[in-house]
Amino acid sequence: MRYERPTDLATAVALVRDEPGAAYLAGGTTQLDLQLKDRVVTRSLLVDIGRLPLRGVEDGGDRLTVGALTTMEELAAHPVVAARLPVVREALLAGASVQLRNLATIGGNLLQRTRCRYFRDAAVSRCNKRVPGTGCAAIDGTPRMHAILGAGPECIALHASDLCVALVALHAVVHVTGPGGSYSVPLRDLHVRPGSRPDVETVLGHGDLITAVEVPVPDAASAYLKVRDRASYEFALTSAAAVLRVRDGVIEAAGIGLGGVGTVPWWSREAEDVLVGAPATAETFRAAAEAAVADPFTVPGTEFKVELAKRTLTRVLRTVGERR
Ligand SMILES: Cc1cc2nc3c(=O)[nH]c(=O)nc-3n(C[C@H](O)[C@H](O)[C@H](O)COP(=O)(O)OP(=O)(O)OC[C@H]3O[C@@H](n4cnc5c(N)ncnc54)[C@H](O)[C@@H]3O)c2cc1C
Ligand code: SF4
Image (cartoon, rainbow, N blue to C red; front, side, top):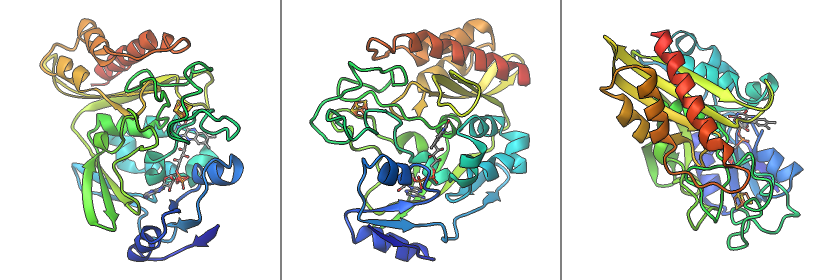
């Protein structure tokens, strides 16, 4: 394996573009695990982007532009995030450990690979994501930490990011530069549901590099709630992010994301539709939760997530309602 550490964006993109087996390396907390420890991903070239000028947060008043190399800890500590985006701060601080958060970058967090234990075990031969067409060992294995939304018989692997759940609720936008030029994509459209091609995880082409994430700072209350087996250093069983603007008891605007349940960071337009224009009451919150988890795909071992996800969303909505 070769290793390069360019200092400018164009060189980094060209290096990956020119080699089919190349990939970017940011904090390395996912990439190095998969390549060196689990040995399930083989790259011929790792292009370390750590020296590119993509670190820092720009405050544009009603939005933050977060450089892709900003670490999770740096973003959580940013004064605007601390004061006006509790949903982002709570999601970040609920993720991984402080050691990991000091290394892990925002771009890498969006593109972290699944924690499906069968995907990460090279001795398992049935994994459509790792070896297309071989089947899915998780379906009749131990799928407790797997997805119920956007899932199907081909793959039930979870997207495990907490941050992404907060960012889809905020309707964040991802900026990309690649061999074909620069473009932007709403975060909710960045990840691709598995369908018959679980190995295709995002809309990014080979060599496309996330440069920044644009995060709206709405005039709204927000919160993130993560339900997990232990208090720290644990992925979500279920989680929910809610952003609500309420005036005179009526919900004027809403943003909803779910975690621990989706094959992609789960944005719920259905829940938002129930909430907007409705009174901010317990009945409305439960109706939104019913709409958000209306069409689950469960297998023995994941059914419990249906009700747990609804309760998680209902509770976080209540919290946000109280924060106004
Ligand atoms: C033990 C453990 C516990 C964890 N717990 C949680 C948790 O509870 N919640 C949570 O959300 N996350 C959790 N994580 C995941 C962690 O947050 C991610 O591993 C981390 O954010 C990835 O960032 P990185 O900079 O290290 O990415 P890397 O490992 O360097 O890269 C990850 C992937 O993204 C690609 N990539 C990175 N940056 C870019 C870019 N700018 N443009 C294009 N491609 C890019 C790489 O090629 C690679 O495929 C945990 C990780 C570990 C190891
Ligand atoms: S859930 Fe997806 S990643 Fe996990 S074993 Fe099945 S196909 Fe592979």
